Length: 261
Image 1: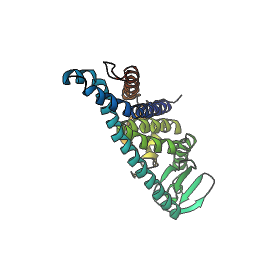
Image 2: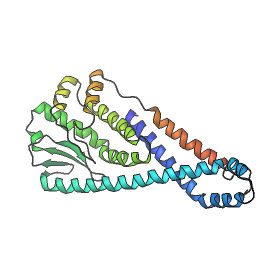
Image 3: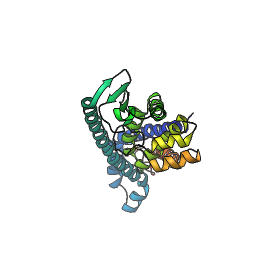
Image 4: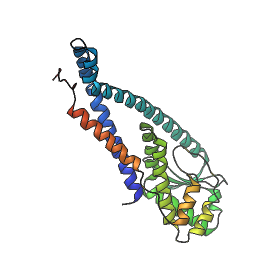
């Protein structure tokens, strides 16, 4: 399995456990509020705090999750808006459209994958005017992204990263790993390929990634050294933290004194 796939599935696993824990905490909210209300009238203040620290922790985590979940909804709407906006822009620039290929009527160097469930390789007339070797590099790069369904995965990671602290760092790690894998696959002669890569000007896109758009400096270094970036330990920390919180909350669902058991 490719390293980028390992990162992606670890990332998705963290998201699944995240939502599962969020639903678990939310489903017990009414129970915990009743627990606090009942015990507050029967216990002295110090004992009350001591025996309900776990519940106050759960409520704090739930509030943090609600904050990040609102970020997730906002990020989804923002990315969807830019996706639809880009789609309309591309439709205006379409010169020719084939089954899985779109040619744009512009001399700028543009090459990227676009689409979520209906995907295309998008190339410009400027790319078609390059020499044969350069066109081969570019098309093969985008073909690998297309076969890997990367435009959908990149969109998902961009949106889901908003659920976590340091989400942008996670997003970068996955996208950089995938781009480097593709760079290392396209051409055995890395120097010829890097010459093609450097021809592209950097352009920012919210839903799809032009060939030289993402982390070009890091990509050049990794390709020259012919190595891939490591899997970040932060993902394992996220998974461990979420599972630990769920296990603890499941074991100590009520207060430590057990008044509401």
